[in-house]
Amino acid sequence: MKIISIVWLATGIALMAWSIAELWQIGHNSYLGVNSGAFKSMLISSGFSLVCIIGALGLMVKKAWGQIIILIAAILSIIYAVGYLLSGGIEDTGRIYIFNVAALFLLSIATIIVLVKNWRLKENKT
Image (cartoon, rainbow, N blue to C red; front, side, top):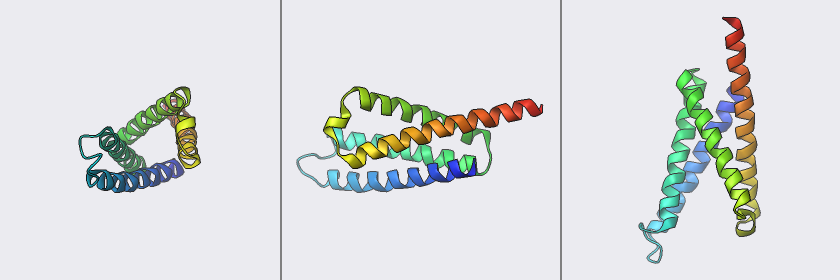
């Protein structure tokens, strides 16, 4: 569980740094501006990164709410990855983005497996 929480924390911090840099760039671009879809997309990305960071911190201190938040983040990541694949996102984006989506998908699958296994172990102890 510790490794999962560290990876989610690193993912959240990296995503937040990227989102802030993109928000700054988009906000200062007179063509795009703060009313553009790109700006709104980065706000969503920033919100998701906060969910990852808060959930990972909750996992690190072994709180039940941390597990629930990370589970929600994992499910949302799987939905995003499947939607990305089905909507033809691979043709529209570069290799780095494809790798990131695949890595997030695999992290989400691993997280769900670990959380379910952890919950079953707790259930068997009682």
